[in-house]
Amino acid sequence: MSTFVHTTLTAEVRRLRATRSTTISLLAVLVFTSLIAVATVLLAGHQENGPLTAHTLDDGIRAPAKVIGFVLLLVGVLLAAGEHRHHTVVPTLLAEPRRRRVVAAKVAAVAGLGAVVALAMAALVAAVSGPLLAAHDAPAQHLAGIPAGVLALAVTAAGYGVIGVALGLLLRNQTAALVTALVWQFVVEGILPVVLRAPNLPTYLPGGAVSSLVRLGHHTAHGEFPAWQGGALFTAYAMGLVLVATVVSVPRDVT
Image (cartoon, rainbow, N blue to C red; front, side, top):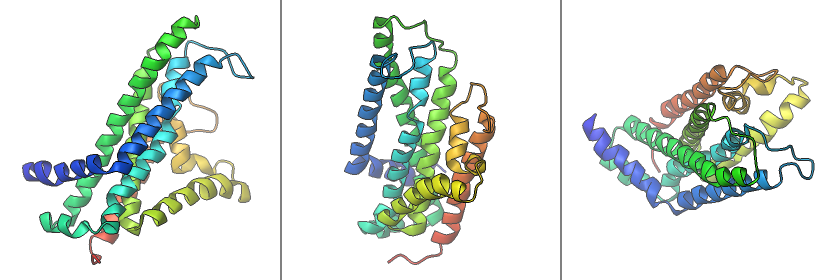
């Protein structure tokens, strides 16, 4: 176990840090989140936007959950499929021939990154929104729900990162993996329920599970699972897809 932590996992963390597209994507989502936080406060009460409330900060922390989720999915895809594109998979397997350990290291690295980015994003929203809310005489903010919101954000980011790794392992092609994710998001979760006249179907899919999870600490919305059930379902999707990817990818030849 010690060797695994100090070699394989460390190598995957270094690979994440060295990938320029990962750094650019994460910086972009942090900038985007900052702009949204500023806009939420400045536009409150104008142009049909609701007024500032005691939950504005809490809501601002939870709002970018699916955005950060997509970015971590992209990072996971690049981490797994990128090795085949750049032909670094062979040196990786020479350093650690036990492929299951390589898969576990990739999953742990991207999940840890997701949690760290979620914490950074929550801190950034608080740092940006706090002074603006005070300057605009917003109601005193209810802070009790913020830890639950940060936890939901971290689970969402980590889970989508893990799903990205699984897709990358299964398809071994970055473009194919990203197209698959987009088709699932917009066709399976967006259009298919309308075509099938099954409005409750999205509740049972990953996106619906995340929508429930993001309400952790709040009242359950009508037609959604309780937050803990949404989190459990989303985690089951992520880990189930990793299991499938491991079973399929481990015996395959590396080309």
